[in-house]
Every structure is written in C-alpha cells, then in structure tokens.
Length: 388
Ligand code: CAA
Image (tube, rainbow, N blue to C red; front, side, top):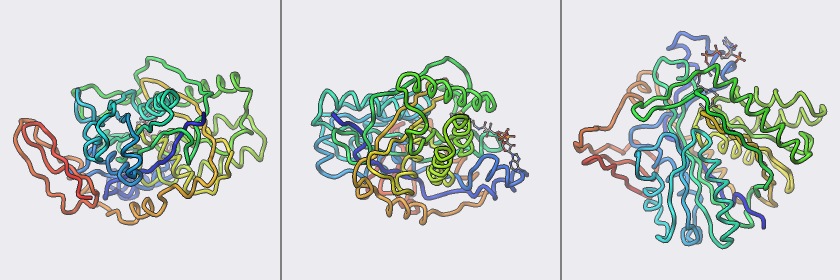
C-alpha cells in the first residue's frame, strides 16, 4: 500500500526581523548572518501566536470537510509546548472542529518530533487504510537576546495529512535512524530559552548525517545518483549546505550539480523564516515542492535531526500532478503580507510574557492577521479563538 503526505501547508506569524538590521544592532558584520549563517530574515511571533495557534493556522488552510471526518489521529510534534501535561494537539482538535472519535497526543524529541509523528502516522495508516492522520510540527525557537543562537531563532508550523494513496509524496519503507545520549542542545523544564553547545551541536548534526546515510546505503544499495534532491533539517540554512557537502564526496558531477541546485530551492523559505525546530525539515520540503517542477517518480531524501539526539534518513517519491494539491499562492501571500519589525520592536515583542500567577489578561489581536489567535489567559488557562 502506498502511504505518505496527502496534503501539506505551513503558517508563519505576521512579523519578521531583517538579519542585516540584527547584525548592525549586535555589532556583527552582516555577511556573517546572511552568508556565514545563511539567513535573510527570522519570523517573530507576537504574544497572540503560540505553537498551538501556529499549528492550527497551518492546518486550517489544508483541511476540507472530508479530512475533518476521516482524521482519527492528531499527532503534534513540538519542543516548545505550552503545557507539561495536556497535549497541544487537543486544542487544535477543537479549533479545527475535527470529528470527536480521534486519538490526540504530543510528541517530543527536540526537532525530531515531527518526523516521529510522520513515521508513526504511517504505521497507523498501514493498519487502518481508510483513516487519515493530522501531523503537526510547530515551534517558536528562542535562544535569547544578544546570544550566539539569536540569529538562528524563528517561529512557524507545518501541517500534513498522512493517508493511503497520497497526492503529494509517498514515504518509502527504507529508513535508517540513530539515537545517542548527548548534550548538544536542550531546554530544562524551568527554562524559557534553549541551552546549546553551538559548535558541538554542529559537529553532532554532521556526524549523524554521515552515520545514517552510510547505513542507508549499506541497507538499500542505493546511491546519491538515485536522488533528485535531499532536504535537511535546517536550524539555519548554512547547516543544510554543510550537510550536503559531507555527502558529496561521492556521486558523479551531474548528481552533485543537481543536488546542490535543488538544495538551493529547498532552503529558500527557511532563509526567510529561521529555525522552526520540528517543522524546519518540512518547510524545506515545501520550499522544494513549490519552487521546482518535480517529476512523478523522482525520489527525495529527507534528513531529520533532533538534538539530544535522534537522527533519521528516509525517503519520499513524488506523485503525479502533486503541484495541483499545493497552496503556493497562500504561502506567497503569507510572506508578502509580513511586517518588518525594527530591532527595538522585536525586542519588545520577544520580551512580552503572559502572567503566571493566574490573573486574567485579554490580548489585543486586532493587528494579528492569523485566523486563529490566542486571545488571553485566565486562571492559568489559555483562551483561543478561531475567527475564520
Ligand atoms: N562573512 C561571511 N561569513 C562569516 C563572516 C563574514 N563576515 N563572519 C563569520 N562568518 C562565518 C564563519 O566563518 C562561520 O562559518 P563556518 O561555520 O562555515 O565556519 C559562520 O559564519 C558562523 O560563524 P561562527 O561559527 O563564528 O558563529 P557563532 O559562534 O556566532 O555561532 C552557531 C553559530 C553555533 C550556529 C550559533 O548561532 C548557535 O549556537 N545556534 C544554535 C544551535 C544550532 O543551530 N545548532 C545547529 C545544529 S543542532 C540542530 O540542528 C538542532 C536544532 O535545531 C537546534
């Protein structure tokens, strides 16, 4: 049975910071951010957008009534969840008005959570071919103002419908994965921002790429020549370029050129958004699918990495007329309608917090163009509204 991604879409908040502005404010050569890190902008979430609303908005634009009736499993990958107990997916289930007889859970393993959800969704469809699974990957990456990681922040979400006979790509069964208990990046439950050993995290990411790719080659006898493109988890886009370089020690010239050209297409959206942790790999996939006319039957490689760490290399096969099922215009409009923040405005937005003492706050959402917003908090309960 063919199982894979039937629908896919993303959502980003209304605000962004230009990396040239950030570089000037932080007294850094702008080329370090735009070339050395490979980012042009980073998305900034206002207080009325959290991982729940970003994910719900991403899903809102891909679901129809048939999906709402067929989805019986919601899996929400995130590493910036809003509750230690309740799954963020349960809020999304209500906000999207999905039929009630569904399982809903949250998945966590750093940036790998979305891939974990996708692979488990595949198993669920294999057992229940008529059902559909809603996979959500949503995060707000925060390292803190004036930190080395600041330039690699971002905010956004990807939503995918996983089903039998998918319209976009099938996910193949061959896949190689790896777990190793390391401290390259983590966020203790008491911290609002991530802790990271930046250089070590880069090294580990690249080591995982090599290890899972070598194992994949051993197990499948496939080579780089069998791939039209490879998408990588993108904590920042230069990381994807470095990852591909480590693989390009093999492969003929034509393959190298093709993979480099297609990587360039796959990093375009992330250059404008920044790291969205669990959703980064899938934003790269959307950038490729929307930015290039792929042919049915072409094979795509996907490398997922979640610090701590778990990595996986898996593959998808492009389906006939896949482009008819993308939301290219909607995604272009999201970028076109964003408002640039000055560094002062960004710092103010970044520093805004919700009360933690149980008091009531009502948020002004008039400037937030997203259909689904966080409207306030009362007695420690977040209040959401769908204005669609
Ligand atoms: N022009 C062009 N390039 C320049 C430059 C200039 N004027 N100045 C510096 N550069 C280049 C440097 O040469 C360097 O390139 P290479 O990596 O190719 O050597 C690049 O810019 C970055 O410079 P530094 O290494 O000096 O940057 P830094 O010390 O400020 O930190 C970072 C970079 C480690 C990525 C930091 O931003 C960070 O800690 N980010 C968060 C952690 C992270 O994203 N890790 C990625 C792997 S872990 C993962 O993938 C999981 C996840 O999502 C977090």
